[in-house]
Length: 342
Image (tube, rainbow, N blue to C red; front, side, top):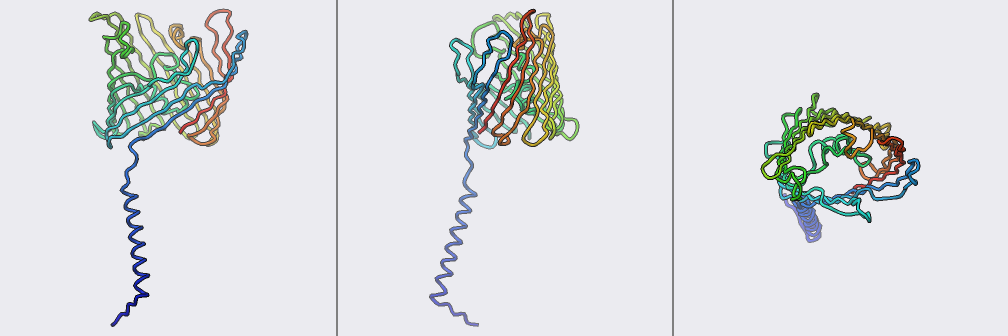
């Protein structure tokens, strides 16, 4: 059998082969192109506050309640570093928006097997990060221990978390008191620790149901002499569902013979994919009220709506804080909140 190949037939074949080679090279280059090692993200929380407290002068106004900018650099699949900048009101006179470092740490994934995480530096605290991750409504209000000032939302420490099967996640952190590197005050020479365990008793899915137990011990010392110590125990039952995200909390703080007890509930009921009804109620005994809570209780409630899921949301909330002192008026406010993530 004889095949006749002419100049006219060779040209289309050569062009086709050249085009296929270009496509193949392009596909190979696209597959080989590594993903960016640097990831940048941010959040902006804005609020319009209408003060409705009796005889307060109705101090109302628009403000940026919080702004965050985070950069994460991945050295490889295990090692990475995170820097989170936080812009918030100073509370000084004059009041202005000031930026500070909220998180700055290096971390290693997989040190003790799958699911383990080692962190060193200024990082989120176990309890607050766990609840914020489960209920996802921090832009509307803090959880109980953070609102009451019992446990900070971030702290300088060396921490290690690990996973035991699909049911138990646990961790421990060691830190230099709550004053960190301020080098002022009585707790500079004092060590503290935080420990937590989260149990997911059914299929191990944290987003469905979890029980978190958190314990924090802090000692204060002057030189080598211990002067005081405090112990904080917090327990939270949290659930994440297509219809409702919720958490039930209780916390006990023992310090210098006094005992502060607080409890709270947070719920985010979702009647549709983009809307929800948010509500929280916190309260505590007299010792607990002497902290940042500064009232017998806090009630916040109102509807939310997401224009773009996970990116752009708004909420209209009513918040009331009964007065602590006799004869004073309850603190009431209408809050129009916005949250934008990028």
